Length: 405
Ligand code: ADP
Image (tube, rainbow, N blue to C red; front, side, top):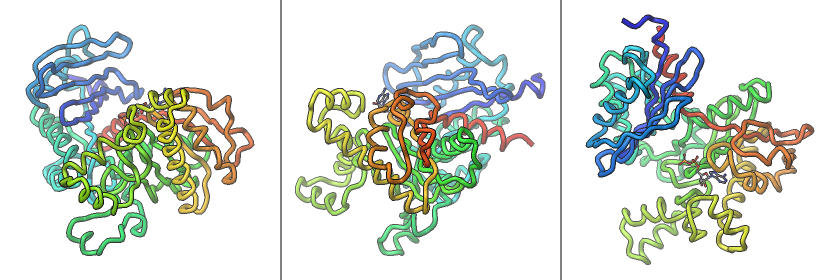
């Protein structure tokens, strides 16, 4: 039997179509006890990269035909005498799942039951690549640990506070009624975490601040967080609008899509591939989707690499300005995710030209990677900050909160 005070461990799962990321938290201290990645599920060469905090990662090369088998192997790794962190699965108080799309039904995290599973299923057409994998993970976990509560944490939930005039598109209204076409937004867990964290770092009340959060990774989005509520965000119905991303185009005029489909004789599948996989930083630079490669090439004088960087920074700056106007002011700008946390060049170029808003960058403080800190000068009216994101911690916190009676 596991004592009640030992049942403070929460497992966080992020289930993709052929991979699965996991972390185990001890919620008494919010410490990560273990994390790992199950890769190439259902494909030759599947393996688990598992790490117990403080030890070197270990790799188990094992056949993993499906998600259920992957979860079983992950649980074996967590129970392993040498590399594990659990003596018994009863030590897990609950499991938190990242779910990409909760549609209009979920404005917050929720304990999974039959009805919740049904709604996630109903949202599959809105996130056809992600929700099925998320669902598979939840269902497999329920089968393997039927007594352990499962919680769904949605990428879209934080943005459900947007007003209708921000989330509606100017197409005939009946399309919204029939197909729920509207702006949903994504990366909500990340935006919510870094905005709140910024208020803590600035030591100012979260519900009084106007913050623009810039989540800049392979996928990117900018969000206006007005007094703790998302009021606008740059991703939309899908995950291509807004700023230039690794391989996604960002904002384009929809008529160019129609034009290209006609000119190149592309069907919807091929056109979708162009917009999602061949565009963005990769498509413009012709070099790579990875910003590090593009920064290096731009430094060496490559014109298209420079253009991609300029487009990225200009797009971010434009959104910050628009969102300051949307909120009627701005107190802080937060940078997070791979590019936001690591690229001092992008942060500098974005903030250049925003002095009129009252933001002054401290070049010395900006010269840093992946560290939580204020990067604006002490006399800057608007604060600029780097806040490394931690979506897993938010999922673990929500899961713990919703499952302790
Ligand atoms: P994902 O959206 O897949 O989670 P990440 O948040 O990991 O992506 O961000 C990946 C991006 O971060 C890549 O474009 C990568 O080039 C960029 N990045 C990571 N480290 C650096 C760095 N030191 N300098 C510039 N860009 C970086």
